[in-house]
Structures are given as structure tokens and as C-alpha cells.
Image (cartoon, rainbow, N blue to C red):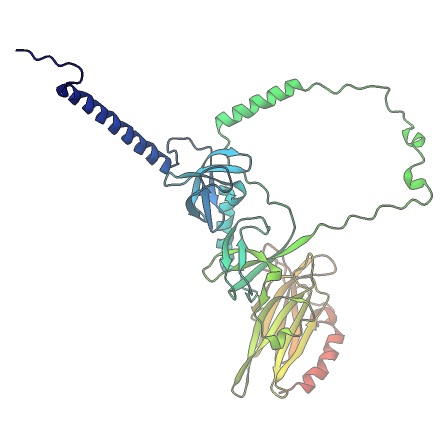
Length: 427
């Protein structure tokens, strides 16, 4: 006996209900799969057109081009990123975990810039310190001596760093753009095709009229400068510049900071004699025991604001007097065009200490000067040719052999003026 089901029969509703449940399950599973694909915005199979590295200490990748779009992931300084596409100054990058997002191209470093930063940190390990400096507020450490370069570290309030170098750079509105996109064969062919098309569309500029006459200078007079009452325009002022210091942090990082934000950590009882100048470098040159106090003798170099090309223009040596219980000037030299590094050196004699520096003479050449310091007396003992790239003196020996006493010993007036100080400042 065959049972036939008519529409609405309970036995016919089972297959339809199962089909509806299956369709609903497929829709829910598809929605979940679509949602999971949006949670991972990175496209692992999209080819990369370049490589970049994170410049700042931390940086967020955004989901869309808008500045207020949601942040996807945070990356750190030095992380490698694959460039997927560019939109003017915005770049879509992909992390090593496969997450993709948008970021400003000015915050990225190219492979060459990252290599230069590593080489800078490597070479700065052997640079002598020009003194410790502190900051009163948080200060950014930049990859380049430019205000718009990425800041990969920050000096905390009252933090301390070592000053290593100095540089004066013009204040540019932006840093030079790095070449982040690799020049592949497809890109080169496309650029060549565009340039060929542009070249064919340009026609030579037609020439009209007769040739320029031979006496054009005569018939073009009078010039504006020949007219009475002519006043030439004043020369354009030089572009504003910034003083930068190369510093080394306690954790060994090396970067550039604004020099005006640093304060050399020399005692206030000595720093009060700076006469409004900036202390560019300082070194201790011996100790003095005065009762239960231990005092240092100090050598410092001062710089005038806007000094260029020298890094300091004056030297001064302060010694502690056990008679007056205060610091007194034992040596001073002004109108000097000096360069880093200022360092302590060994000089002949058991009781003598010494220091050296690079200075430019009136002949425009650079020399390494070596001074001897004994008690309250400072004198110039040698001067040899040198180079900014190589602080070791050039071959040929001291050029002061057989020179005048004024050149070898710092001048007769310096000797005579040192007699009263040495007589009244004896211990």
C-alpha cells in the first residue's frame, strides 16, 4: 500500500525543514568566515614593491587612509615592513605577522638609512665623551639632524646623556624623501613607456623674430643700475639653522638632539663664569684635596650662539685654590676656531697632565694642539697637521720645531700675564 502525501502533510515538512536549517547554517558560517577575514587585514599573497623600516620608537598602522581610522597593530623601531602600495605620502605596509595597514611615509626609513643609523651607532662607540649633559624636560632623539626626521628614542626628564659631536644644519621644512619602492623590471618598463610617450607629445619650441643683434648690450642701456638714485636690494638673510648634538644614551643608543635643550652637568660654581655663552664641552683635569672636600680642576670649551663653522671659540681652565677655597682661572684663550674632540692626553713628565683639541689657524689649515697642565700653569707644547676625518696627527712631526717662542709657548704676553696668577695662587 502506497501512501501519498498531500501539501501540508506532516511527513512532507521534514525535508523542507532540514533544507532550511542547512541553508541557515551555511549563511552563519559564511558570515563568520567573512568576519574572520576582516580581522586579519594583511594580504599574504600580495607581492611587495619595496622594503621599509619603522623609524619612530612606536608606530600604529591604520586600517584605512583616514587619519582617524582604527589602529590595527603597533610596530616598533627597526621592524621590517613590506610595502604593498602607495597613495601620495601614505604607504600601505605589511608586517612579518601578515598584518597590513596604512602609515605616513615620513615615518619610515629606507634600507640605506637604517644601515647608516647602525653604522653611526657602531662608530660612536669609540668616540670620546665631551661631557655629560642633562635635560629638564623630555627630549626626542632623532635619526638625523633634522626636526622632521623620525624620533626613535626619548630622553626622560632629568635624564643624562653623553655629548659626542656637533653639527649645524639649515632648518628645512621637511626631511629628504627616502626611496622606499624597489625599482623592479616591471616598474622600469612602465616608467620608460611613460617617458617615451611624454617625449613624443612635446614638440620643439618654435623661434620667432630675428636673431639677437651683436650690439645688444649698447642698445639695452641705460640699465637700472645706471640710473641716479638706484639702490641695490639688500642681501637676503641666511636661512635659519639649528645646532644639533650627537649624543649617546645610557642604553647605548646614538642619535641627534637639539643642542639648546641640553645643559652640561658641570658644577654651578664653575658654570656661573660662562658669560652668557654655551658650554660646548668640559673635562676634569685633576683633583685637589681641600680638607675633607675633593674638588676637580676643570677644562671647558664655550661657544657663541650661532657659531659656524667652529664648534667652540674659547678655552678655560679652572683650578681650585686651597687658600681662598674657590675656583680661579688658570688659563684662558679666546677667538679660537676649535673642533671636537676635546680629550685628555699623556705628555712628557711625571707631574704633568695634558689635553688636546683640533683648531683652525689663520692660514685656514687644521692642526691638533696639545697643551700641558701642571699645577696652575697651562702651555702649548705641540701643534701638528690634522684632519676632521682622522684625529690622529698627520705624518711629518710637530711643525713647531725651531719656531718662534710665541708660537710654541703660547706668546710672551701669556707668559707675563701668568706670573701674577702663579705667584698669588700658590697653595
